[in-house]
Image (cartoon, rainbow, N blue to C red):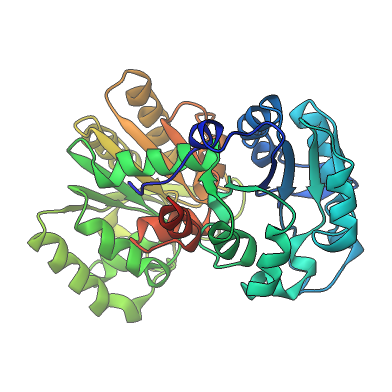
Length: 403
């Protein structure tokens, strides 16, 4: 696990009372008519905000929202998010009309010790995404200390994520710390056997992930459209299913690499098939060897789901990224739900450390009503995936270097 300073380190040295702390958060939340659709990202920042505010620091929140392409856009202002954040955090959240310059300086100057302020959208300045040194200098001039609590943005080499951490004494916030510790337990020093569930539509988008996991896990469970490509490469006719046939050679190399690494690849043995991916479409369960030419595989079958559950019963650690089927459309969430509930049971029993992440995975676990039952569910998308791929994340590297 990366070595980094925490809030506790900052509280000891140099101390927090009277300091202005710049906190990078991820408040890029769904917003409609001024209402936040999913407040989980704001909720998960509360432990960090509370700790700093109660220690007597001025808490200055830095965030991006949408893709304004480096120019101010009223439709992508964080002002309504500030109002929503105040309700969610249970404390007043002031707002500054800019993230640098006089507007930010005046708002910070007016902020009392223990107060919380959200600055305007960082991406209203093109220099943010360019990781511009001058822009990071302007940001750094606003505060005394820097805290990164946005693991979901850690894969971006942006000024507020990477450069700022090198200009001020820097530490990880509670959410960042929790995320890095959970991922470290799952992949860097795991209790074995280690299993991974990897789903999603295309093998081509997860080549780095598969390549990295094969060397780290004992069992790789492949689902979703990806499984169809694996099956095709192994000579199975997948009918009209989504399948990257041009990736067959690549899949064969992955299979050979897995055998050499003593990593067992688990593929579907039966499936739910239908003519169309529509809600409650007529479907049937067939052996994977008997998929009709005019049908699509849309979910793993009951025998496959039961086999996965049994295999996971012998695992000690699980990393999960991607659903097993087209979970958004009933009844093709069945296999994912069955496995998710079993994973939740194993976790509650203390038999399994379960770490999951990625947008579709979080949505699928929420649909199965087990989101709070796994050991850790990451709110990050791209950062979680890049971590699983074994890549260095600029935001994490900067914190590590700062330590």
